[in-house]
Image (tube, rainbow, N blue to C red; front, side):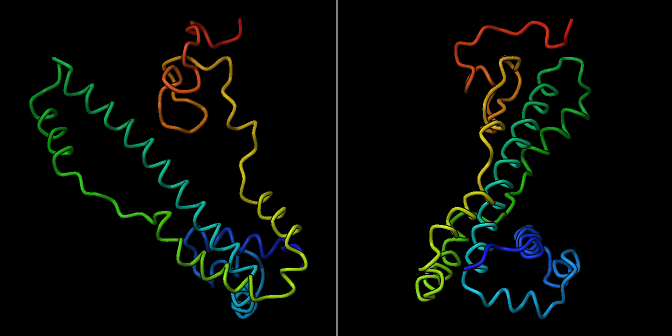
Length: 185
């Protein structure tokens, strides 16, 4: 199996993010039939399934982080004695009327991943180049270690840079001393 080309990677990323085949083809400067041919390929289909899963995980994590921030702001408004009754009422209604958002979950991607895996196992070309394919998938869809390592300059009350959505002092910075000034002198 050959490594994915730049246009193929562009199409995988675009389709995983919810773009149509037409939009993904245009973004990668290829024709729609080319994209449809790639979608018939077992390795391409599996990479797309994994990319969709990664996108779903990313969206879920972002939504969790945003929800936590929004709840903190609403709590501050509700606790502020200077807040007007109208603002308090709107904040309370926003909390009470919150609708659950339906995002693609990891479980939603499982059937697609299993089907693509079955197709991969039936393809003899993939068997011959399994190590190269796994290395390419790992390189495409893993985050670099540098983005997940907490900085020694992270204030204790800031959100943890590991992406957990928790405060630094309650996550990676447990027991870390407070950082009083993050600006360079």
